[in-house]
Image (cartoon, rainbow, N blue to C red):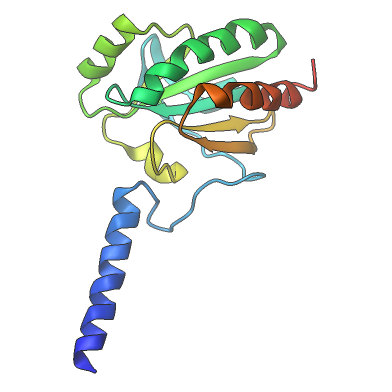
Length: 172
């Protein structure tokens, strides 16, 4: 019986540790459809980036890292979406999670970003957002509410993600 309690306690401790390691907030909250998104301020490629400064836009918030293969695939697509829908009030915001910002800068030299890039080397925002893997993206409506959370990136995802962006922009 004591062994069983020890094992259950150990299991709970490991489960909590894994949840924190994989990016869940201490409360275990992850943003879901309809949730109001949390604001943040981070250093960016072109100065300070504050999410609330983008209020009124449809935002594609992407969490990425330089070592992430699917992230490398997503950048050309995000550049294309930024160019195609910017005039309709669409913005891409990519938050880099590398512990060394220099790694992100080297990545961006090889894979340019024609959209806003912010840096979170301490990894605070992914914990708040419940990010579990990379890339993880959120489509946010003009009122700051989550429309979609998407994990990973494959070329097969592009059409559906663009359809969701078009719908968020009002089918324009």
